[in-house]
Length: 497
Ligand SMILES: *[C@@H]1O[C@H](CO)[C@@H](O)[C@H](O)[C@H]1NC(C)=O
Ligand SMILES: *[C@@H]1O[C@H](CO)[C@@H](O)[C@H](O)[C@H]1NC(C)=O
Ligand SMILES: *[C@@H]1O[C@H](CO)[C@@H](O)[C@H](O)[C@H]1NC(C)=O
Image (cartoon, rainbow, N blue to C red; front, side, top):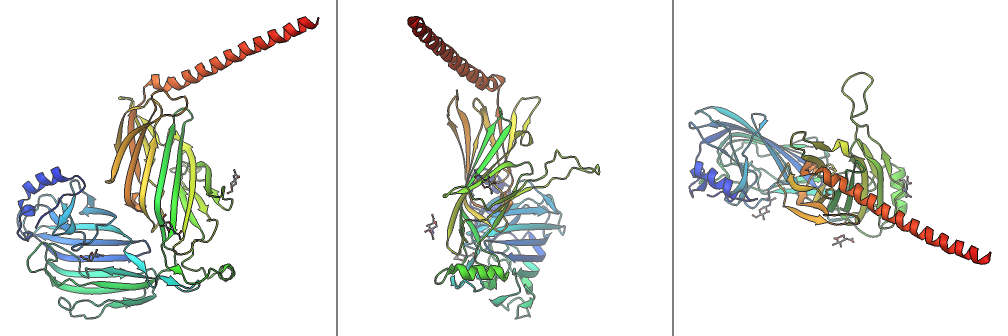
């Protein structure tokens, strides 16, 4: 069994596996832990599902080393986003890799004595794990999704004494679901209560991966109704441009949105659509509006598509942190909201591309380190939308002309970070540009990316000096022309006299 390093963790894993030699051997994972109880909840959505799992583990030996945490079974895609807590706290040194072809983490749990207990919790967001079934429906039909997994049981490298699984659908309308294997449970049936399915409890479950005598893993599915449109974003191109001069941070998003729900059978009827709006029976699969949360200080908001300005949008400004509250308590911060109403109802399989942008005061995003003079700029990676996956994002940060020694910090791994230079009108050395790309971006990635740079006073003065210079030259030319003109005019006048 091997941990295969990914995401450039090769070096880190090499030293880690030297420490935990069992991870690099072909033997089964040493059973240095046992799960005394495992509890999992799966919340099914549209484009994403949220899986939270709590592992109550017990060390079977002194100094058991890192806990190997399986993120899925063999061949399962890794989650789009995950977070691991040990005893309720974030820990350093969690490493991602693969174990027998299954995505896995190596989680440091500190020094443990034999029989000591530790609680590990995993929150994972999986992307595109449900698909429409049927994939073509009538305009007024309900929308059903099929969620499938290869692993009914929670995948683990260790034995589990008892295991409980709950699967929550967005509505109680569940058409069908799979059966659980009876090997580890006396209850052959899945219990349904409202929109929740309860599987198990399962007792004495052997390891499902990384060991000999693996448990009988079986597939499971849930066929459920969802009443919200399945919104996807194929690509999001965010440009963030800093103007020290104007004290402004401009953010502009080019969004290629699509409806990932079932496609429409037959023709779209605008009349039926109007009627359903009138009767407040919102058709699940038709996207008619979308609300973006903007920073509290956002202003000068714009929204346009290929045809032009979309006048049906509505912007509600937020309340900035600078607004003092009357009660003397901490000032209230309220996000701005932009309600977007696409020009046409976006049906299943349809695309809609648009651009939104706004300005906000640079003072809220930029800090200058008094000691080193370095500038640190915070740029939101994206404006998160609940249950929406961005398949490909590109964030382009354009720094001021003359900025140097650019460094980037991202709070999560990204696919690529590139540095380049962009030159425009009146620039001298050009503007450093940082381009960050990442696939499978979710609402949990709506965090700040930090860029630090030097911006010497000489560079800050460059632009005003150049502008002054250019204005001066223009003025001079103007004066000269005026003089020439005047001379010609006066010459003509003199001639006439
Ligand atoms: C199920 O297993 C197959 C074969 O290994 C794999 O291709 C697929 O991605 C797995 N599906 C999930 C949801 O893990
Ligand atoms: C665009 O539409 C908005 C309404 O959403 C309106 O307030 C704004 O003035 C329009 N802008 C232009 C340039 O027409
Ligand atoms: C939507 O856009 C994608 C990618 O650009 C394209 O492949 C697809 O054909 C488009 N769908 C429609 C209905 O235009």
